[in-house]
Amino acid sequence: MASPYSNLRSKCDRAIVAMLVGEHCGSGANILPYAVNATKTYPNATIHSVSSIPDPSYSGNRWVKIQIEVKGSAAIDPAFPASQQGRVGFDNMVALIGDAMLQSSNNGQDLQATCDLINQYGRALAVDPTNGANPVAAQSALDNADMVDFTALVLKEGLEGDGTIEADEEGCSWCEILTYELLACPSNVS
View 1 (cartoon, one colour):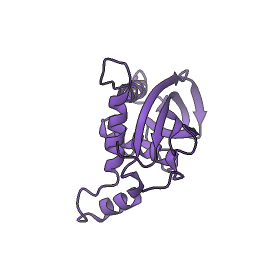
View 2: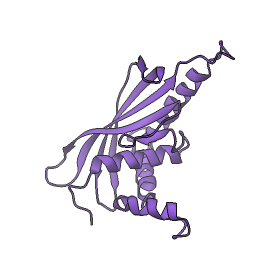
View 3: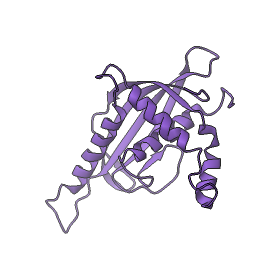
View 4: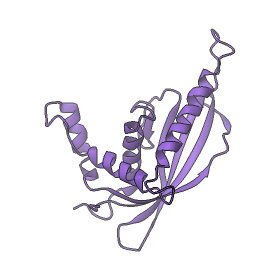
């Protein structure tokens, strides 16, 4: 059993990334956890568990503030100057992620269906589907062995960002920040 002092925020990031990729919101190349240094293509999303508060104290359960930052390119393709392709791709990714994070199993009373998917995809990270036949899959399962009984308990929707345009090192891009609060525990079989 994992210690209640494991890196729960890292687990939340990895589980949500796995769920969003599994629910076809993007790929492992453009939906990534915060703690990964990689070159991303537009549109992309970064999942960042910003902070957490114990609930109750000493239980290992924590309310984790989740930020999902979606970026899209505002650069105009000289071959198609009137194209809205960058904006359309960005809008689609924001919508897909928003829909995936707001799945309810009881007419919108709670987001338990989303928690169930986060648990399913997050725990699957600890499983090697090839049973050792693929060294990359085997290593990935070993690297994510701490996810075997990660549990998302309750999800609450937060505020959306204001759709600001910001300049970054790659040029101009759109940025939307979706926020959620997730009650999670590092080791619990639900």
